[in-house]
Image (cartoon, rainbow, N blue to C red; front, side, top):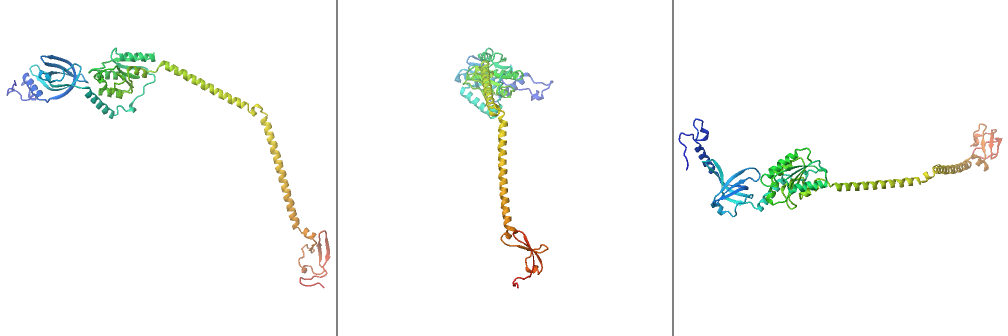
Length: 420
């Protein structure tokens, strides 16, 4: 039954004072009216408790990612319409309306419908989240950090006394006996798992001795692996400065953590094999490398020895005096060649001189004289070319082929005239 506030009371909460307060029943009534006027809403959560009495169900619904819970009442009329009875631990969506019990100030939710979330719907949601995060670049290869060849210390996040923890520790130790781990045990399923794994990841990432972090869990149903597709966990792994290895479930399991991790291992055992080298394989590799190095050095020494022997067998080293004798022979050949060339040159020059001499003789006045001609000169040595140059009684010197004659001009007869 509704209670009407007395006229003397403040109309609103803001008008109340210490001298003029509201009765508690009035506040409770106003809260009930306000809350029950709120609309119907669909919510999603996980069933933690379910108590059925007299056909009514009293359940506790908890947020799937955070530590928030609410009491929900499902009346018998609604229970009869449900296709299946609510199962503790299942994920559901419920149509609820807030309800406030004024006498005790208790707030609860009344469910008018309750439906389990099917695997198909979960897969669709996960794929939608995967695509959205991928579009942001969280899965891009350029953001993947390389794992150290031999980590100093490995951080391991896994369930307490789990098979995954034993597999990682045993197989890593078998491969590299001196490997060191810092193990943080967390919940690996349920509503608290994602937050606990995030806290452990941040703790290990802040430790400067940790070189790589492994998040490991054995196989399970899709609902059990949902914490490893939590968006907050995915973003925490992306923001970590230390390389992260995802080793969740089996080969077929594919939580979103696998996509953002720097390395995805198909199983925890596979993770152990990929984070540390195998000591026996490393020794075998060293032995093989040493053998290859020995063969390379021996081959090099053999080649160099053969080259040295070949050099020693060369005539210049086998018989060093050949360097002098061969040069002496070369010098003798060049000397003979230069002598021949000089003799040939002298002979050619001699022939040229004889040729020039013959040319000079052919053109010399002596040749003309030898043919019966003579050269007449006056006393001053000038050659007589005209008769008028030697008048009568001129003393003449007549050169013949052999010797000369001295004569006097009896008569000078010019050209064209005849002597008497």
